Amino acid sequence: MTANLSTHGLHDAAQMGMRAAIGVIFIVHGFGKFGNPGFGGWISSMGIPAEMQIPIALAEFIPGILLIIGVLTRISASLISIVMLGAIFLVKGASSLTGEHGYEFDLILLAACLVVIVAGPGRVSLSYVFKKVPRVLQ
Image (cartoon, rainbow, N blue to C red; front, top):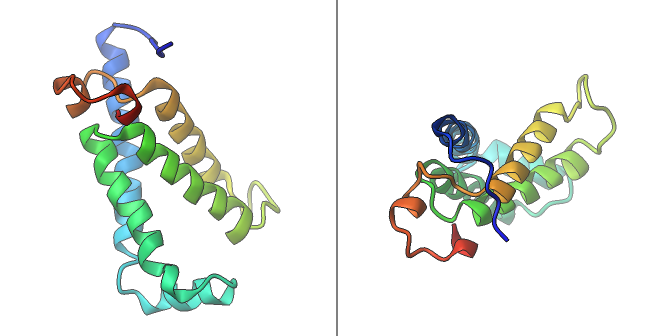
């Protein structure tokens, strides 16, 4: 079974817009973590090994790029969803939706990723252009 929201052009533009917004956010967030000793120290203070700095940065940066171009979108959105669950539960402790340690931004990014996982890349994507890409890899 496939997710078929609509064949209307506005749905394709909306899917591309959502993928692009998520992608840009995670490219910027992931890029800022590369070689940033402050981030390594910060995650160490939470009990996460500093060696996880690069894998965390890559888990944000690469899926961000893939979401924008529309390749491996479901896998990319899944990786970002895992990162967002970590942000909500490990970093912010899921203690407050709003406020100083609020997770509302993380929650909306998680929800947007779940939409991408269900809806797929849409017709404005490289996966659609190269239709030989298996659905599971879209």
